[in-house]
Image (tube, rainbow, N blue to C red; front, side):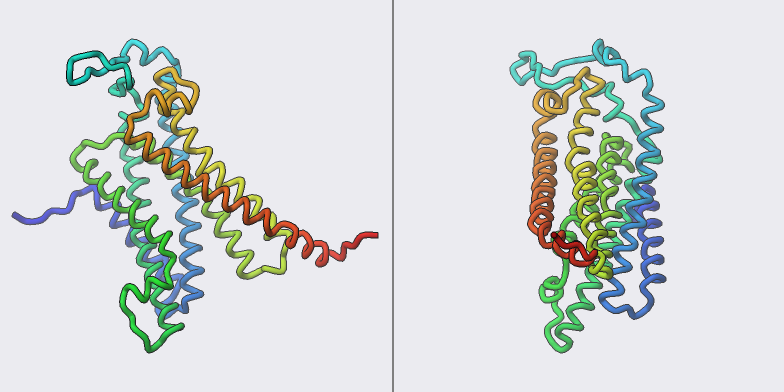
Length: 305
């Protein structure tokens, strides 16, 4: 039997190709590692801006269609509770069969996830290529095995890209079989991309304009705020949104009373990881703050007395 590629993979391939062409044109045929790294960050800024705009538009369109669902009692009459293996009633989880947050299906939502998947696959190749070039510059005559090259890669970012890309590929298999659920929530999570432009601006200022201390410090503070909103607060907002059609107004109550155990574990792990990264970021900025302020005073000619 011939192997057929699901039609839902077409948008992923298109995204992969477009980002590859952008990257190829911007970096040139034989880029240096530094130029390739800069182009990779510029491409990520472009992508995160585009996907954030598309995600916000998609979510707003969904909310407009759900105007009546905002009435808390809409799902009250449809709340059902499962039964245990022994036939006893279990009041552990609400019935989500009528919850639009999970049941909504959308061609646009699917397209946004396809764009994200194609970009992650293309950016993974770019990161590996950059690591290879850095390895070749540092050790031109040494071993060029994968393990040796990966020493020059951002392995945390590679793991992030590969794991999410694989998850999105699985999602598109479900889309192909018309079995997808939760596309609204998945697109909500893509709003985490909204902090990436500020991250890259921070990198650009510190790499190319380190003498502009006030701008560098301002970018630190802006990134702290953006990271918190896009990757810590956002998780609670998504959880609360899931529970709202069931009458919940507290993300904490939704987490403990309405979410299934696998969802609690996954979402909790994500929130803890992002909160940990945010805490480390805040601590690093606070640690550098006296030194940064001292340099700013010296640069601006400020002195006491």
